[in-house]
Length: 177
Length: 277
Image (cartoon, rainbow over all chains, first blue to last red; front, side):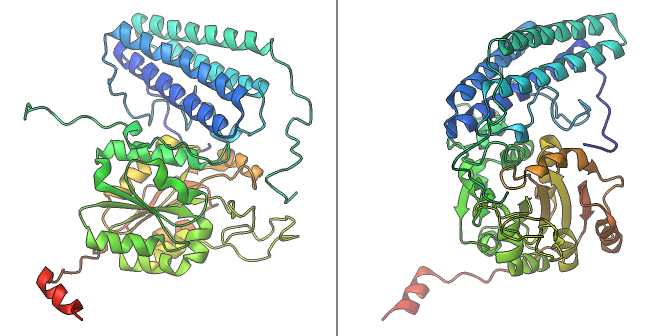
């Protein structure tokens, strides 16, 4: 998205930072669950299961933040406007990238890009932090995202790269090409 | 029971039903559903005080995916049904949803008059410039040169300009949003619901099956560079001269909302008398 988007609100306190982190992780859980449902509906069970697993990892992150901050499960996160510089949360996989015939390799590529965006986002917050405590906490979040990046990269090494004609459907839904 | 117990805070999930959408993977309508539920959560309007009315088409499936009251009606007639509902039940928040084919072609005349009547409705049009459900025919908002097997070389027809038409017909609130910006879209929908009168929100929602090139909308969309206006002439100039990818509230007017005084209802006995054989 172009134009004058709001700049990410730089958190001044650890609580503000963790509220942003909580919002990001919740958005990621919701999106991965949505993608899993979407693929399950279209009978792509393997990719659905993979997205379900990713949602589980992100949920652990949510639980970790809530536990660390002593917040209740229904802790309300602030509205996203101004919290990040992209239209969607950095860790959300864009819905329009989905394809009903996509394979685990595609799903992991999208997840990898999302994790890298989240890593970059927290690195940006760490670089802009005005207090040592906020900087350290942002760096910790950045490092946790880096662990996710490494995890997804290791999964990618274990799945087969799809053939060039992976999207070929002998009975396609469209006939306008 | 403790009467002092505060009402529970409603989250977006409280507005989503257990039915899973069957839209194509990648369809923009998924995020519109998410934005609608977020908007309702922002407003904390209980689901039983909201009705979602639709016509026919992919996007018109949306009422079933919410926990609000729903009416999946006749092709192009969502606004007619919703108008009747709102007039009969002004206490309800009535949201009308559909696509560009349903709203601008089959229901085009209803669109004009809904704008003109200015009944307090919020109309969300998920515009993908194509009839998706029926396999990719050109719709009123399709570009004239969109080349495909069903219209080789394109239709050559000028595309319908819904925002200008809404404004000229009397809509009290006109906005454009993009499904790839779910937070921004939720804010616009919430603002549209809060605004009195007929609020029209055109939501660019890619159809990745029949218009895969619409994935690039993400790179074309930008926030409207100027604040909303209550001057229809200024709004019309902006809308007529923009590139079709400005998102945000473009017009918020103050026209009187339709509020016809309701005649005293007849008693049941009167009605029985009327229908007596």
